Length: 180
Image (tube, rainbow, N blue to C red):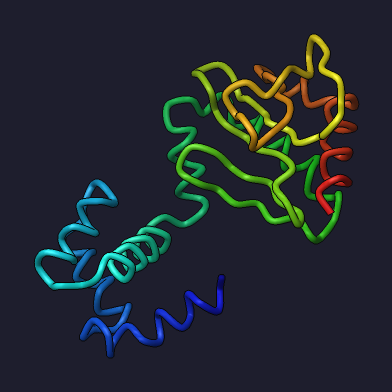
């Protein structure tokens, strides 16, 4: 997929009349609230095809939101949950140097070759930790994935950093091991 994206970026000046950086500058001046608004603007005002418009807007947004900004936004107003998030990362990072931590708008994906955990501030007082551990029975604490659907198999609700304990660390490690 990355090669196809790079080809698209390389072909952008010829196909759209501007480089990716030129398009990013134009979009920065407009600062659209929604992805679709930026795509529609490029299509209608500049005659850019949908594929290129979507790529330009997506890459522009990635640049405008550094990973730390995304995490800061997730916990804005609920900073009391940050110690739980930070403790989860402290536990996960030593598992291996093949872990990628990918903040998104509302969640943080923890990936090895596959995603094995998902961290989401769910309420003002709770983080939902999604885990992908196939064929693991649920317990009172290790619940069915619920709102995470197929992205995860299990869910653990965390309201305090002390809940990131040995049992939870073992589940995280098991999810990591199965994400080869």
